[in-house]
Length: 137
Length: 132
Length: 288
Picture 1 (cartoon, each protein chain N blue to C red):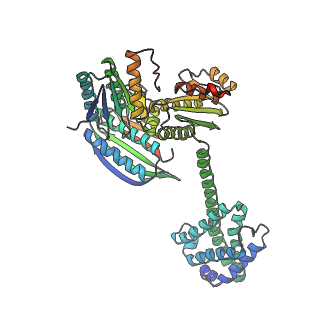
Picture 2 (cartoon, rainbow over the protein chains, first blue to last red; picture 1 turned 90 degrees about the horizontal axis):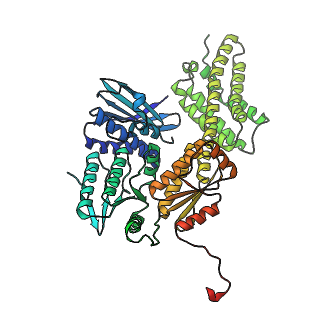
Picture 3 (cartoon, chains in turn blue, green, red; picture 1 turned 180 degrees about the vertical axis):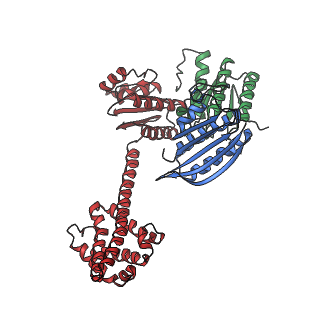
């Protein structure tokens, strides 16, 4: 069972919101004592997902949660947008696949950087991506 | 609009990124730097990213772009001072920095640039294998 | 007639404690080497007082009641310290179970004339104390697990010593199996040392790695790639013949990596890169 210890919500609508958001995530990660490498992985994954949200979903909302499960603490980030959604999730999760002119490592790369990765999308109404990074994961 | 300063030193251009970049700033850096290479005829570009706490796929692409663009304008690019955590994350992310050379710090980066430029043009016999 | 069990017990506080202590001291598994009898008495006294203070007629049926929190806390404290001191689970369990004997014994004496009330009371007390002993075991195991976790951390830390073998060259001998969490520790230690010492060459010696499968190879390749990203070169040494065989049989491509059979040849290669030369000293002083 995952307990939520702390919650924070941020609106991401402009590019300039990304850096404050990353800093906020870093603050929470530091607070629970996450090591520098895991912190960097989490923030990098968050950065990829936020960029996707801005680019394809026209911005949205990011939820930062400090969670605990048993003896483990971690950070859960949930990104929700009301964009066009993704029609073929397995394809979008493939390395090297891109609709824009990026490198196509965003989604699959982000998944490799975190412990849990969950993506849900309804074409036409939006996408929700949820990631968890455990303190010692 | 914020800009990252580009310093010229002899035949080199130096860039120190001191703040976490948002995308526009990075894109500006790319175009500014390519402009500067053309204007100054620089032979080497050194980018210090020791203050960057993360490099994501976008930033990685910008660095690669700068490297490749400079390359076709006959300038070598070296990225120096990457944090260990950043390097580990980039590997996990599956990103390679193929367009640029890397070095531990500014000093080693300058040595590497000098070696690259010398070995390519001036005296191929000179014993300058560099540290790569 | 309804008997108030809690009152009854509270009245017999002293008697119960005495019986309990007698039970404990009579037990063959008593660990006088780990704890003095006085200390044991204090612990018992503390727990019993807390228990008797907390129980009343209402919460006897409800072992989850918040009023027992204090009892749980004291008990888990005792259990945890016992786990660390090296008590066996049986010895720790006996601590609570012998209290049960003492309490039931007292109840039997007091309610001799009312069998119905006795059955009722023993049933409730049984339930309560069983739940207490389950909790004791839980905390006992939990603190043991903590010890294991801490040791795991320690092992992974001591097993990644990064050595500066020469100015500009660091080496890291890997001993034991390389899994993904271990790889992260290794990478982190290695890259950190590279930065701190300003070294341009890292040697990863895998003579102590029992087997290299495709997963381990992938971890090695990642470590080399990360080292290169930082601007240093990484040499893998200590490739035993068996390892070379499995690597080739598994079709793992290590051609992008500099591999050497021994640490010595890796060091020689590193000297070559740094343009260093190691020479035997000439005996004849004039040639020097």
